[in-house]
Amino acid sequence: MKKIVALVSFLVLLGVVYGIYLFNKKTGSLQNVKPDIVITADQLYMDFNKNEILALKKYEGKVIEVTGKVIMVQQTDSISNVLLSSEDALFGGINCSFNKLEDNLQKETVVTIKGQCQGFLTSVILNNCVMGKIN
Image (cartoon, rainbow, N blue to C red; front, side):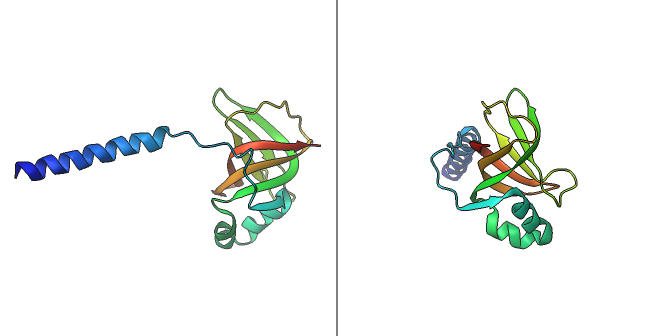
């Protein structure tokens, strides 16, 4: 009986250690990653707005390079968000989260951003973004 308790305790401890490792693991930069899909902000938002389930199958988890016009930039201590416009969206179209945004972006600037698609709430969510071209 003591062997079973010791084995279960060891497995639980192993699971906790692995969970802590995954929680603290840094995500790699997408700077040198080739995008799976290259698309405009309008088209990406339209795909999610038209059929979210189909769009999730097509885009979720993929590295997407999206081009669009900046309508808002928010910066906090730990993260920066850039919102790209879409003609069909009421409150913005593509929400791009950066771990570190070094460029000083202005509204109405057309940019190309690469990020990993995480899904759709009121906007399409791209995480772990890196800045591409600024027009």
